[in-house]
Length: 218
Image (cartoon, rainbow, N blue to C red; front, top):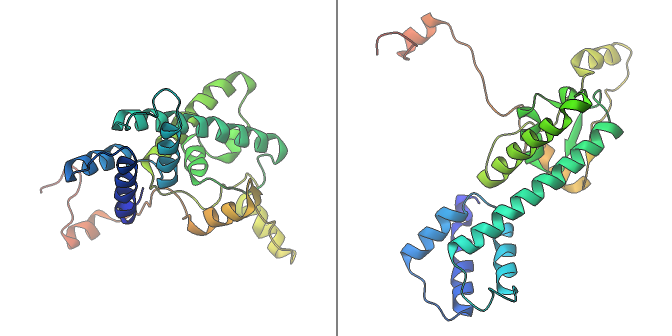
């Protein structure tokens, strides 16, 4: 969750506890926030509802561990569904096209696995390992909540193909939007060039600016 959602999250916890005729305190709210911050607000709402409607456990007020257990399962389910979406696109779209998924965690996880072309060209014998690696990364990003990710996953055609088309007066092909088009567009609009900004500076520039250098005097 985002920091700006903390107040809404706190009200959610208060409402849930009021339903069970339980009081809340600042310590309780901080504990809930610390445990659930890595998940989305809608995910937490869904987990609260699932607990409340559980025939066995729903008669008691939820403890933090109860909801976190549900959320962990939710993240695992989302990762499995995300892999299914990626695996389908690998065969239907292929390595050469740029792609935009409707889930930013997919973009970040694919980058962790080496990028879209590498993913699509994975040998069948290595696919199980790749699936495990992708789903672990997807769960981690989902639980983190906020992270940088590329606005699109570049295909193998790359800038050379775009330059060739430009010379011929032809527009570059549009990326393939995978999943819900509106959500995919939001992912594209909110994304960046990549997950981590990398800049290069000379040692002389660093010295002039008083920046520390590796192995140098502090």
